[in-house]
Amino acid sequence: MLLSANGKLMNPLDDLFEFLRFPSVSADSRFNSDVDACAAWLTTRLQKIGLEARKYPTPGHPVVVARNEWQSGRKTVLIYGHYDVQPPDPLDLWDSPPFEPVVKADKVFARGATDNKGQILAHILGIESTLKERGDLPVNLIVLVEGEEEIGSPNLEAFLKEHRSALQADVAAVSDTGMVAPGIPTFTYGLRGILCMEVRLRGPAADLHSGIFGGSVTNPATVLSRIVAKLHDDSGRVAIPGFYDRVVSLEGWERDLWSKLPFTEASWLATTGSPRLSGEHGYTFLERVWARPTAEVNGFGSGYQGEGPKTIVPSKARAKLSFRLVPNQDPSELRPVIAEFLKQQCPDSVELEIVYQQEGRPYLVKPDSAFGKAAQKALSKTFTQPVAFIREGGSVPITQSFKDVFGIDTLFLGLALPDCKVHSPNENFAVENFYGGIRLNRHLLDQIAET
Ligand code: BES
Ligand code: MN
Image 1 (cartoon, rainbow, N blue to C red):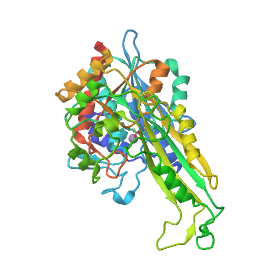
Image 2: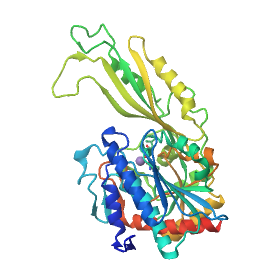
Image 3: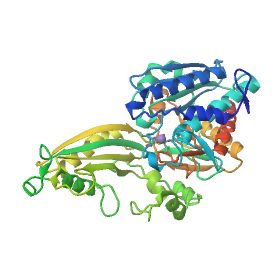
Image 4: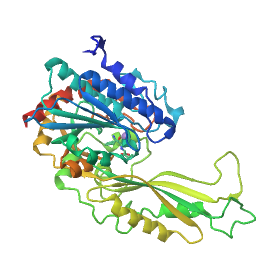
């Protein structure tokens, strides 16, 4: 229990529940006022702790920044997280409504519970408890919580540059990644990047009778299926020429370390619910996800989707594609490479349009820097087990910008469990990890102060 600003006893879970009730879906403009209200709530919460906090507008969703009173000679730590969440759909697969948090079996169920409200709030409550107990923090602190991570942080790099001197830190810390198993502290030293696009094909000007016209015009759904089928070769590799040009190979020590982790094909199968695992030949499932690039179809549609038959040649077909990238692939370099491939596969009897969506660069850091070691000490003190070293397949697009703009590394101290269902129905956060995150923040700031 913590004391709130007005002296009332506060249960940290009450705070989390308030935070989770905002449907702060960044991707869907119908939620814009909820996103803004969530940022306002967070700003007030940070002010109550005794930090100087402000909500900054951007061309998109607001950024919330808080800081303590800085003293010279102390390390400056930037704690980054996001208050926006993924869309909750499909709603009918949730056991309880996504924005009405509940605790069941020691887990908090709600959209954003793990990704990222629970994890960033744990840091904030850790900071609050240290301030209450000691009246001060051991470091100069910046808390930066954005509202556009789930749409690729399109406005954050410009914000960092605009506020470069106020935000300049020695190191960044982020809890927005995973733990390999409950109770196993996990240090993530690499993330994949991402490049998303929508491919739109147009054949005839409108849907046509497939008996009168079928056979005389190209069906865009057929073309799109052929293009999508050509993205991979039979060995599971992406078949786009030049796609692998800059890929950095996995190192032997990583393969060794990962082969000893508490993941088995059986556990991965169970988590995915897929009938069988598959992927690029020559790599284990962890290697495929953590250190190899991929091409995925995220959405695919054309023609009549309703009940019963409808005999048409559709006018349009579209697919949403995403490419996960690894060091040293660069999304802006790959854009024309992929576009060229798509154009070459497309006959001139349909029109092709490519609409680029979000992107983010991959991230890889040496795990044994002084700050890295401090983070690992904080992790092992918090969870009293040896630290697991991993890379992960997800993306946190802004981290490479922290390196470019401030010249600093990012420490990933994740609290997401393998079965927490981020981005899926019934997302949840283990209550134990929420409290673990609060303790972790205290150890982290102490350890960084000692480096
Ligand atoms: N927390 C995730 C990233 C993540 C997930 C890292 C799992 C490691 C393991 C983050 O909120 C996220 O989902 N990012 C998006 C970024 C994209 C929309 C640009 C992602 O990875 O899909
Ligand atoms: Mn996410």
